[in-house]
Length: 232
Image 1 (tube, helix red, strand yellow):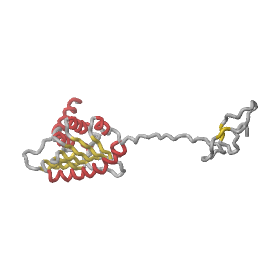
Image 2 (spheres, helix red, strand yellow):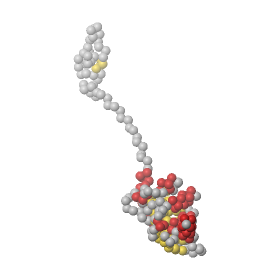
Image 3 (spheres, helix red, strand yellow):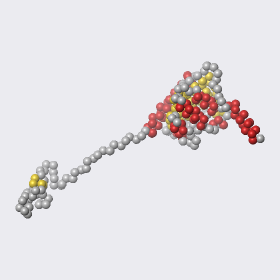
Image 4 (tube, one colour):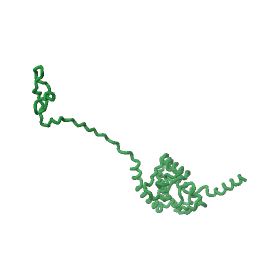
């Protein structure tokens, strides 16, 4: 009985185990809805079509399969940049650290206002927008996406919004991560102690006092009296 249930479960998910690009070379727009359609597979398919660039704006990424697809593309030489929300980036199960560790550029919004997009632009010609979060459980929820195939006039709108987000948040992230300026130590010479009786225009002369041996004191003094400290 257990084996039968496993087989039935496998057969239920089999129809949505993959996704294929609409046939032909003409521009196409397609709407998909979970849980009936496999939105994860559609996202991964779009990612895998990339030859030059992948630009994403999303709430966060906790879907390991999508994260791995992005890493694979980055390692193949495709420019992969992910802009995402500050709060969700540090949520449990977040793949942000894994993406960064594998070379993917990640830009985290620094303000508390949510970045709630779920969109991708690939090579300027293919794209996706919708309500589908890049999470492990989004496939089980009521979500939707619209795919744009070979439609640069539509994808450029996604690209423009993504670029505005990147230009806004990337400088803030760079300044936050920039190393502090090295401190330069300055040397201050110690002050020379000046005798209260000394002045800038005083002259140093030999002490006028005569010692017990009958010779003149050899000490020098700038005291106005002409005597050193011992003979004053």
